[in-house]
Amino acid sequence: MRRQIALFDWDNTLSRGFTLLRWIDFLEERKYEIDKSQAAQIRLQYRSYQGGDIAYEDFAQTVVEAYVLAMTGCDAHALDTLGREFAEGDRGAIKPFARPLIDVLTARGVEIFVVSGAPSEPLRAHARWLGITHVRGLELARLNGRLIGHLLGGNTALATTKEAIAKALVAEGAEVLFAMGDSEADLPLYAHANLAVQVRGSELLPVGEIARSAYGFIGVALGWADEVDRGE
Image (tube, rainbow, N blue to C red; front, side, top):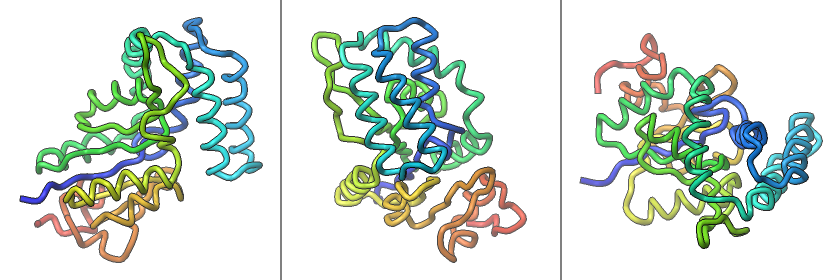
């Protein structure tokens, strides 16, 4: 049987807001050893993006560059522990539909991939709680127990990186049953999916004409019960 997968973005898709910003705030509140000037740069770039002063791709590039500089030299084991603590306190940011949707997909043998520009330490902790099997987030290389200034797997906030990940999975023989995102950077995830949904605020919008009639079990999980066929 062909391997079936689902591709998800994280920020503003399965979770509200910008995880990296909350993570930086959390680390500073814990008086952790991050570079404060780079943390300030992350906040500045976020405000510029929210104000419409910079495009998403520029924002994703500059923020991730600042994040790498902020985290270089940090204790990797301590960050893993803090990531779990952060995720426990951050569960309220996870959207209500996330767990039912993931549960219905995994019950049918679909492997879940999250491809996101969120930091890997808190993202992995959230993924374990939700039952997500694969995470592709911002992952800094480690050397002698410390983070070094190199991203493993590239900048996962960028559309080009998401496209490369999706293409590689398809080339390995996977069928992308479902994809979900919220921005232009997620278009490469939709492009490979049989069924795609875009999150726009509180709305869940099908991408393409077939979405509401295909895979009724997903529609039910998304609250489309009155608009989809409950059969298979």
